[in-house]
Amino acid sequence: MPQSIFYERDLNSAQLEAVYYTNSPLLVLAGAGSGKTRVITYKIAYLINECGYSPENMFAVTFTNKASIEMRERVNLLLGEKVDVWVKTFHSSAARLLRMWGRGLNVEPDFSIIDQQDQHALVRKIVTGMNIDTEIYRPEKYVYLINRAKDQLLSAEAAESENFSTDFYFNDVYKRYEEILAKEHVLDFGDLIFRLTRGFQENREVLDRVRERFRYVLVDEFQDTNHAQYVLVKQLTDSHGNVCAVGDDDQSIYGFRGARVENILNYAKEYRNCRIIKLEENYRSYQNILTASSKLIDNNSERLGKTLFTKKGEGEKLVFCRTDSDYDEARFIAGTVRDLVMGGEYEYRDIAVFYRMNAQSRVFESVFNQDRIPYTIVGGLRFFEREEIKEILDRSEIPYTEMVMIPNEYPPNPDSTYYGPWFMIETFVGRIKIGWRKRVIHIDWSETGLSASGADVVDKLETTHGSSYVHAWGADKAVEALRKLWAAKEEKAL
Ligand SMILES: Nc1ncnc2c1ncn2[C@@H]1O[C@H](COP(=O)(O)OP(=O)(O)OP(=O)(O)O)[C@@H](O)[C@H]1O
Ligand SMILES: [Mg+2]
Image (cartoon, rainbow, N blue to C red):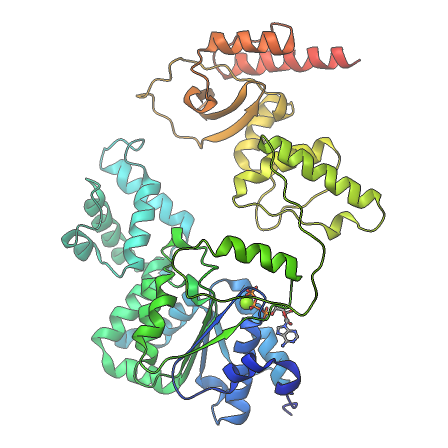
């Protein structure tokens, strides 16, 4: 038995308007925490319960698996029973549609899907097989370019004729890659949407059948769609215009994956009779936080513009602190965390630290470890659990903060072949970029900010640490020197 849904009780007036509006394409433009996902889930329920749509007419898409699982759960909770509403990511939607209708779309439906790791391995094999220098012509770059070309719906031929990339070997690599995928009957992630949209273009009757089934399309996190996804949404909806896109032009974070925030800006223009509804009431934060973040976001150049407010009250004032270095920043945060926990009002689990890139976790982790502040990294690997770090720690058996590496050659020889991953490491002399091939550790001194030679570094060590320990070439010697260094430090501490 479907349970009754109290739309008026659960939604504010702008949200209600968005849920009830079904006459033409709808763009719900809203800030963080303003109930965008809530609108989509209630709208699905409303369409099914009140407007005569059946669950299988719904096509709801979002970006991550996690978001789609959460949305499906929220829909099921509202509808009070397990109904078969299509709530999926773009990729899994496309894969499913190709399996269902592939034959009519020129794709044999029993294809396999190559994951990112295998894709990298394949491109590496192609590039190596072409006998070109993989240090200059890096396989990762070709993977990136191929993926971006597919996001733009450019086949290898189209990419070539449109001069998609100026890279000398790109067209060749892309063509060989496509040949192998075709021969092995494999699609990569980019192909899923690419092949589907191309199939729809070439086979209108199949597209019509798909449109008959999916009579209403809802897209969450619309600001993150790339060109191919945008085209897919248009194909599915331009005959009937039953589409509700929900997004925040200020929250687009996937530019590096081909997401185009213009999609949301153009949507209103491209869809005739498009209605725009803004959700501006935020349910997560206090007003001080909203005001401060609005001040920053106001600087974004292309935006449709909205002003968030909350009824939760002012809240505490924000603290803004500028420090001289990332270490000082981490120390300041660690100090604040300790004060909060010592004050008795909070536990460690109540506190979150946000940063922009995974690499930034390292400094925090290092300081938290020193201060014995327990932490977990959400959505990424702890720095010390990353493979390259484990490898180097295993090799040296000492904490990395104590590491000092001396280059096996200076200046670094640009011709030396190098295959391992690079990473930055904090040492006594600053931050250096290191990597290794086989057992030779290689250091890029240009990253230290020192115009240094190895000797300068040793000098600097001597002045900052008052003893002379290291001057080693090659990994084994460096490790040996590190052991000595560590022993010397321990001795000093005793
Ligand atoms: N009308 C409302 N009344 C009470 N709570 C609400 C209302 N609308 C949204 N919320 C609550 O606000 C929070 C944010 O809602 P929701 O996740 O739908 O927002 P969102 O805009 O999708 O957020 P995000 O920007 O993170 O995607 C949720 O806890 C939700 O239950
Ligand atoms: Mg949301």
